[in-house]
Length: 260
Image 1 (cartoon, helix red, strand yellow):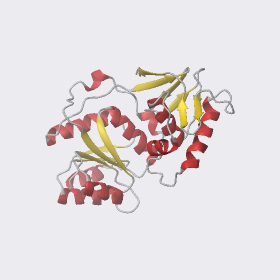
Image 2: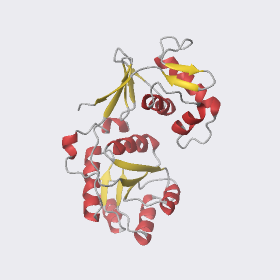
Image 3: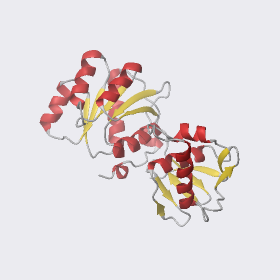
Image 4: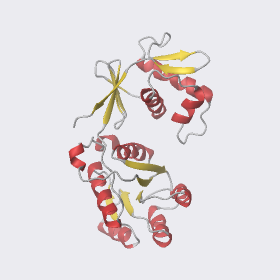
């Protein structure tokens, strides 16, 4: 399933009823990274603060140390499943839960709602519908609803990156595949153009949950990224090495609003 095809930009007018008085914290629990990560990016661009968990065990740890206004919960996960976690939340915390799952039978919906779920969304889904359901559940629970944020594209030296779809296109409009690590690295540079970023800072910005990364891994990822965006990767003009300091994106970055 190509999850990114479901995540289309949302116009500001589509979400005109939000308020921005407080950040809404969402815990997204799904073992499938290919769905979880782009969905988290999408929700963040709609004004939510999203924390990810790849298992029920990880979710329990996060819930024990932080408060969340709502949980998006997959049912079928290795180890403890989502139904068990929802039952635990219903017994110990007053925390709204929306199931996001491939289990679409009516009996599955009934079970999910009976054990404490507030709503039930079947994969694949339109993310705009999910946002509408999140807002509906938040209203019922008395939470503050954040404003939607228009999707933004990054342009640099005729290249374009769509962060929502994680799609990089070259000056001729050809899509250039990039890995998750390369995407996070490029985003770090695009958010800090013409700034020197040393290895430690880059590592903090791009490693995510990949604890095995180390200094040389940053250098290796930069080499791979250069081979994709530089005319001559041996004489890089875009991502320049600053001796003794780190790396710098030597390009003007322009942000533009994505169109539907």
